[in-house]
Image 1: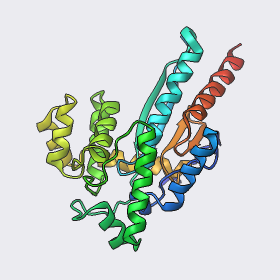
Image 2 (image 1 turned 120 degrees about the horizontal axis):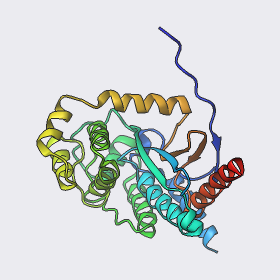
Image 3 (image 1 turned 180 degrees about the vertical axis):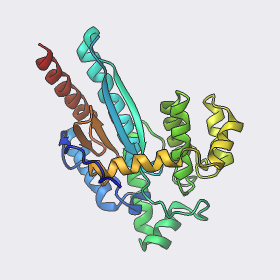
Image 4 (image 1 turned 90 degrees about the horizontal axis):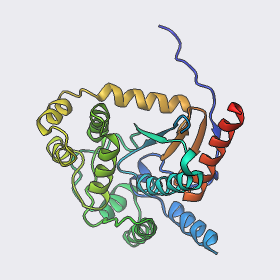
Length: 46
Length: 225
């Protein structure tokens, strides 16, 4: 069996703290995620 | 018109930020096209499978608050507060989330339907239909018959969808997406891969997506100039 191919690393663009879902905890987002999103939206809206 | 910009998006159906991120991306892409004018390259989108909670049963009995308090140990009051907040954020993005009606389920069959739809030229329609069904309409997106109903609503052959889902015809395609996501190092969704070399993580603001597309397009123009 051949070794799995390795893709070149992606260059990350955009802001680095945007909310994501990770694992089954995000079947519903965590309070921290929601709070961060609200805070971010509020800050950017100023 | 220039060659299209390809956006590969990893996401799940049961992912509140994925639907919000989808709307933000669409707004950002629309602004990019408007700014670029007649010379704007086409932006093509392909969705890829990512299961946040593959061990979730197809039929979960209970509400979102039940799920949070019973399975995650979150106090009921806090769970309600969390849901209210994400519902508010979704609402600001033009999405009317209804967590009272939402039905938790396993999404692997829904992912297979997305691949079936892609094979029949309707993946974008299927993605939107499934997200709306899950978050807005309280429809079940885990059972074959319910998925076939949704597929028929966007013009797919209901009987053939039932056949394909029962035979797990596209399960290998789902697993291939997940393997590719792992190769890219994707650990959370939504995750956007642009032209196979740039990554954008999370439900970014629309302006961020516009900025990223502007940058990618500017780099292309510089290379071809």
